[in-house]
Image (tube, rainbow, N blue to C red):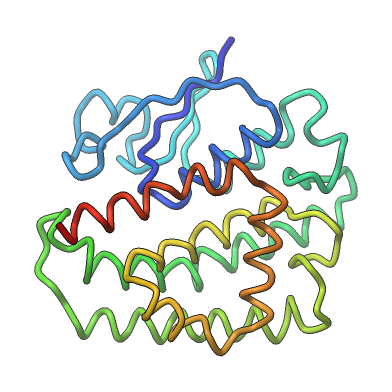
Amino acid sequence: MKLKVYADRLSQPVRAVIIFCEVNGIEYEEIKVDLANREHLTPEFSEINPMQQLPAIVHGTFKLFESHAILIYLASSFPGVADHCYFVSRYPDDVYKRSKIHSVLDWHHSNLRRGPITIVQNSILAPVFRRPLNPEAVAEGEKILSAALSKIESFWLDDNRPFLLGENQPSIADLSLVCDIMQVKLVGETDWNRLLGPYKKVQQWIENTRNATNPHFDELHKVLKELKEKLQN
């Protein structure tokens, strides 16, 4: 049975799931759900995910939503993926190491996640989703992002380790967080440099994760450049 991934590559959690599949050789069918056209709100998609959000997967009769849960399922369910430990999947047998991954993923949703999404949805993506521009919300998003990046830099990357959990390959936590931060690329290089400039360790960590998952990382993130160019024309 082939995995079905319901996706719009504009979504940063979608990109994390697809990059994971590509790097780990998991066969899948990508089913486009256009967020800008509100296809995620249709009754048909609600049968897949009642929360009406992306990504979602169907594997046989099994349905699952929420990107962290999906990544954990994929890392645990496909032969050979969990066995090779820190090869992007990085979902090891060791319960302590698994718990460390869970702690980062839980922190992500209530901290870092709120920064990039608030910035882009209230600035460059506001017209796409039929919303008014909201500079006050953008400023708040920037504060959230800055606080999160500071915590990553001072805690998880404090000893110049290449990845969050101190190993030589990225985990599903690294992949999730980096894909989220990359959404800030939509606002342009000037703002990217302003927001990321103070965090040298974070910048190196992003590059480490990109290099470990290429060419798939760059391929999945082409959508950001393409959309930005389209909106500027």
